[in-house]
Length: 177
Image 1 (tube, rainbow, N blue to C red):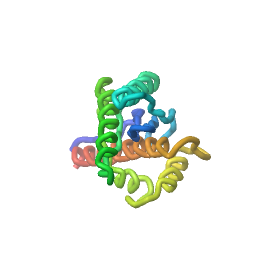
Image 2 (tube, helix red, strand yellow; image 1 turned 90 degrees about the vertical axis):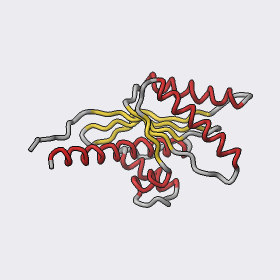
Image 3 (cartoon, helix red, strand yellow; image 1 turned 45 degrees about the vertical axis):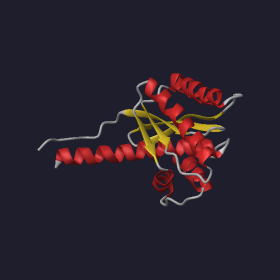
């Protein structure tokens, strides 16, 4: 029987909440199950044309990755909106986020909004303010400034790290069993 242990390796995750007007991002570090906030912010997307707006997302996230050097990334999946054009624009913004992560060789996983909410709050139907509250508590912050896109991005990073830890435990228990 093999002996397997969880290492105390540090992992840094970038969470991205893509949007064609505001793209939230958050960088969270985990060491031995303890989470800490590295940095977060919102890209206020600018540009006269939609391709310029997509380039703004790409270059903004590129600067974030260059500065904070995350190991992995999590991106929110596109949900079907009532307006088809809005859904297409959101998907294109998400594509720009994934492309910049891939250009750095980052593994990228995507997460449904309901899974992120369930992981942090315990229910997939949680309100945005409930998610924001849990993010502040899990990251040891008194409060979080900025738009909800930022706390959504941090929630994605926390969800990514939590589910990553669970997947690793499953793998190790199979090897140990």
